[in-house]
Image (cartoon, rainbow over all chains, first blue to last red; front, top):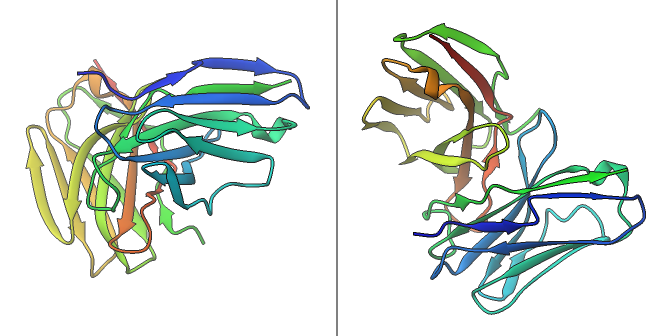
Amino acid sequence: GAGVSQSPSNKVTEKGKDVELRCDPISGHTALYWYRQRLGQGLEFLIYFQGNSAPDKSGLPSDRFSAERTGESVSTLTIQRTQQEDSAVYLCASSPKGGSNQPQHFGDGTRLSIL
Amino acid sequence: QKEVEQDPGPLSVPEGAIVSLNCTYSNSAFQYFMWYRQYSRKGPELLMYTYSSGNKEDGRFTAQVDKSSKYISLFIRDSQPSDSATYLCAMSATSGTYKYIFGTGTRLKVLA
């Protein structure tokens, strides 16, 4: 079956531009997560959705970062006024329902480079 | 101090060797422990998922959790060149927090 799908796979943009990253979770998965992976570092949690609400957005690094989700489907992560330190791989994961007793399944990520 | 510590490697072993990968953690609230494998330019792939202490085996992979020592391990038997990847440990608590806390990953090379 289809896994978690992310687009674009690569994005190069100039400092100061806005970017939008997309995630299509596994069909039927109600929980969706965004993580950031900087070079040589582990994954950092950004935000968690249960359905279209976000009960935990504690990992968003600044107010330049926002995310939304339509129902139990697609999510978009938006970064405004990008900075060079935003360069990273942005990974999306989904699980059948919220709660840490459900394993998370990841997409291949969007590799974001800020020039 | 990071909540989860993992040696970044690289770890190089000959084909057929037994590989031992480890993580230590500081948060006693962690109850769920995961191991992911990540190939270059790919997303993490779930290998093992365990709850609380004990062992779990799946094919060539064995996961061990020692909560008293706050130490988890992944063993790979009869390692193959296709096992060459970065291995990430992750853990989470049972309530209030749904996010995974990840180690930095250990890069493994299995030499043919």
